[in-house]
Length: 267
Image 1: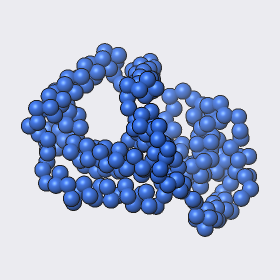
Image 2: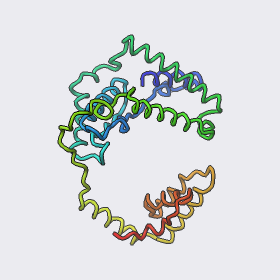
Image 3: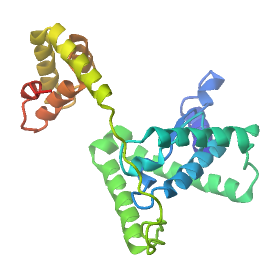
Image 4: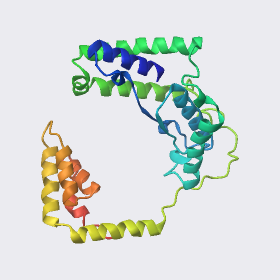
C-alpha cells in the first residue's frame, strides 16, 4: 500500500501533471483475503484475519472489511460476523496503531521493501505499456496468463509444503480438538419474506416488457464488444430480477437453459 500510493503520485505527475493536489492522493478500500481462509481448523482463520487487518491499517487503508473466520465453510454466522467487526474495533481502539499516520515509516526493512516493490511495479507497468496498455493486454490473454501462473505457483508451493498453511498442510497430524463449527442457517421467515416480495413483483410488473428488455440484454451480450450497462439498467427498470438478467447473459454465452422457464420455478 505504501508503494502503491507513492507510485500513484509519481505516475500521475509524470503522465498527467494535474492541477489539483488531491489528484495525487490514492484512496482505497481493503478487504482481507477470503481465499486465505481454510476449511481445516477454522478457528485459525481468526488469527489470519487479524494479521491481514492489522497490515491493512498499518499500510494506511481508508476503509476496511474483515472476513469472518467461517467463510471457508459457509456463509458467515452472526457470531462470526460480530467477531470480524470486533477485530477492526480492537485494532482501532486498543492497538494504538491509528495514532500515527505511518507507524512503520523509517524502518529499514519496510522502507527497503517499499522501494523494491515500487521498482518491480514500474517494471510490470512498463511491460503492460509495451503491449499497448491494459485493455490490449487483457484482450491478448496476457493478464489471465499471469494470473494463472501465480495461482499455479501458489498451489504447487502449498502441495509441496514450501508454503505453510497451519492446520492444512502442516501441524495437522493431531486429532481435531475444537468443537465443530455450526454452519449458517438461513432463517425460514426471511426466505418466505423474500419469496413473497418476488411473488408481488411478478404479479405487478409488465411481463411482456420484462421479457422484451431481458431479450434485448441477451442479444447485446451476444455481440462482441457491446457495453451491457444500459441494457442491464433497462431490464432492471422494467422489473427484471438479477437472476433473470444474468441468466440471459449466460444463455448468450452458451448456457442451454431458458431463463423464462426458470421464472416458473415453483416456490
